[in-house]
Image (cartoon, rainbow, N blue to C red; front, side):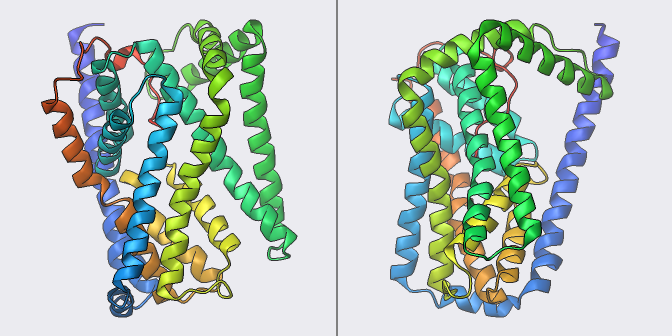
Length: 364
């Protein structure tokens, strides 16, 4: 491709990034300045937060620390040989980038690749770890709303509309699991699945004037073989770690609600789980960095509709986000600087982002 062709493409991507940043900022400002104050009296919200005891804040901080720790276990499960401190550094740095920048997911992948490569992991190992953790993460994200609605349906707490949504969710989850299982069942099936997905991706890329993707059938066969080897002895560990990771985040939210005074009689733990699960699915759409604003608005609205006091609910949601989202920014900067300074565990940085499949990191 000529230089003159390259420049407009790069300029177009730069303009899109600027537009994305402006739109994200507008959404965040709109939600915090206008959306949330419509749902609750902000002075009462801050008063509720100030009334929390040190014991309540300490238990929440400990639960939030446990939540961060659980995802390090996921990273260790999908990348044999990764040390706990390495998982912590990569996760906190990548999380900070994804949470701070519009479209930061792709940049977080690049940083994760650089870190893993500097510790001696190969491109195929890194690709496999990102893909498998992403698959498991999405399985849990799809499964949690189904489980929550099923429990609510058994308790008689949902109408026919939500039951229908649960059935649709079961179908989507079953289809995703079946597709993944089919790809692992045989080399021929893996090739066909990879080729079909590659053709679909190429059709979408043509809409944005990007070139087609090639050799996805062959890549799917290699992925199948590597995945089988990885999961043979680690699938149970990976599954448990992924569940712990999501449930740890939910636990912080549930504790925050109870600590500000939202009782189980007002909003049951199953209703909290349902709201949490559906908002987690919504936050997968990269509207704002880390779902900032979107998550707060969605969770507050859902929990108020479930019966919670608006001021107490919003106070709990803001405390939850302050403990699970905000610390990633300074912690991520600190871990990045530590990675740059600590040469004792570094090897050669041989793998580049282009050598790793372009997927979003398995951020939560």
